[in-house]
Image (cartoon, rainbow, N blue to C red; front, side, top):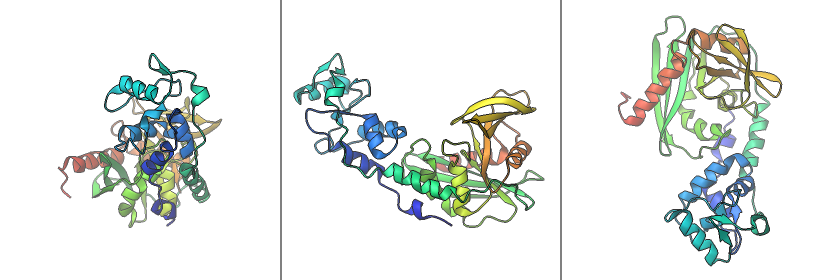
Length: 324
């Protein structure tokens, strides 16, 4: 197992607050600029969430973080009107809710360690262990894995389904606090530490079906792939929404290719008569065709049965109705 990068995760909220604390009076920065200082523009929405939860406005002047078009944006309490008033009091010109001459006063000279860049670099090193090849062992069981959240507390379920009979062999449920926020394309760092106890014993002949992407990911290494390489288990990614790429030509009834940067990285699978597909991609130690076949065999509803049952179990645990 390669768990190093999961055991040393940055405190993203603290990192964000430390950056915003650097913005001087009379200057503003943008949510996107703070995200770039964290290491990736995709963290912009997280920056907004962190600002809304800031309870130390003296050290962390969240009023000085505005939208990229100059609109001052939200502020708690008081909204844009109060935020505009506070900025004017610091010498920032604001007209009709927009910062005047934003580019002249925007602050981007952050002192930063770029924590997201470090995570991405670690992820890319781990990706070197990715195997896309048909699993030689006969598959007898598919274990769906999903996580439900109550705030930052996660409830993870793994439901093992016999491939031949469709009967549930086992249901495991665990829970734990998320130590990393939701940031698009960094889901692995949020969820794998929570599901980790479920993966300590995976019987031979079992393929993990994860509610997330495998190689159908901007880095070609989504949560299903990173989980597979980390624990050296065969995995398939099954996502309800298309994260990236474009759905293209039909290759079989109900099966369409998903193209990303000119390559087939996944497939959209839909039951007969349904227009709502799931998006399937190789996770680790399975082939593309094997991922399609295993998903198709368990596609009783829109979401394949192991993943659907795992979702139900995780939600039940979240609501406190689990029989664990």
